[in-house]
Image 1 (cartoon, rainbow, N blue to C red):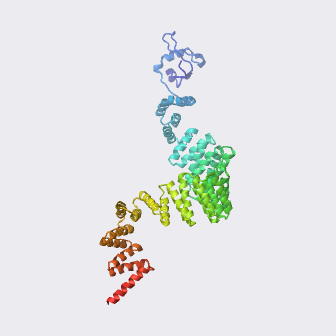
Image 2 (cartoon, rainbow, N blue to C red):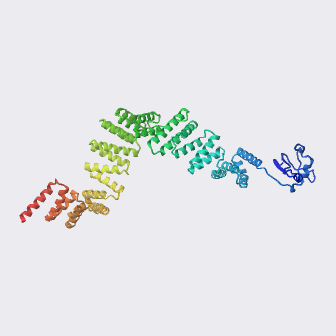
Image 3 (cartoon, rainbow, N blue to C red):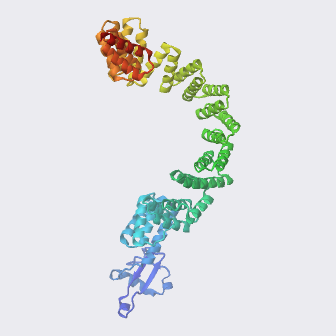
Length: 556
């Protein structure tokens, strides 16, 4: 069977009489008939169209007739084809796509042909080609109005090209066919914000509609715009909108308001000097079921209480928060400092010690550093040394821990521990000449064999290789030379150290003493004068200069 066969014909005899089209017939059922010799078709009730028995004769003369297609009828057929494909989904669109491509090529000046092809492209998942077809539609007819999906596609395409007017036009077209569409509303808001119209009535209306349709999407959009805002007032506006949408979502049982969102609004209020509003936001965030576990919220609330002189409330906030995160470095630091301020140093030490025991290794190392600084500030050197060593053991890559351990060991006179710290520092900072020089000096002082002295000499040479004017390395090498009877070399090294470090009391004094021992008093006096400028209260320097002056007087 052949369905929907459109037959048109032309009667030359009627044309001669001035008649144009003889008749147009939609034949719903035309089928081949084998029993009718010389005839190819059998028609249905032919009398219903008023043609009589002359139709067979006119059909046999088809080679002399001209065909004509009515454009409107063809458009309706294409639309029916698209509707059928739409019901079948992607497979249906893939089936009709070649026909629609041909149709668009034939009727390339018809916007509707390109609109049909855009629908097919979008139905097959080819959004890029669909957008190209949509642009062709608007090139041919700038005032064309498409359906919901194509309008959204056009709006998104304009957004990508930063054509804000086009975004608003096509998004409004999409909303006209489907009010409350969240994607279209979001595009309206984004376009308005990009044009600096974030507080216009149009933006407010779109935000209200978006909050009503999808409050969670409204929260995400408002927070995104807030994060991109450079002005505190603008950020405050959008965070307030996000909080409002979050409360709407909460009322619809779509989720609870985030304590982080409340904290961010509180922090913005602090920037704008709105302490009461900030305190309200921080209190709400902290009272949330997830609030105590958010260390930033707890810290911000406690700090605000401290600013208002409410130390007891701040300590309570720290105490509650530390129950959820007992090893939090930020909380323990604030808690310890506040306890010290309140004169409760033992409680501060106890709280930080407990946190260090419960925290993971990295945080425990940081807490041990905090504890070491606390002990050191309280004058508890032994406890500080233990804490420095614990921090270095927990985090072997911590420069601060090894620095602290080196200083604490030097203060305690523990050369072995000091040497251990210096060995690690030469690995962590191999280009630092001071570590090599200090290590060489300590090794030399503790050396009991030639091999140990040779190792110390290597450390000193490394230091001088990195920094040829390093005073400690030069003076230590000079001491080695002096002890081995190489006085001239030792003097040269001492004076090199003094010339390179004219503020170093030790270097200046060593050079002056070397010249004095050799009886070269004039040169020694010159170095003692340099030393006097660096250390005006040096009694030995004054004594040597006086002796030199007396000798010069006697000589005269």
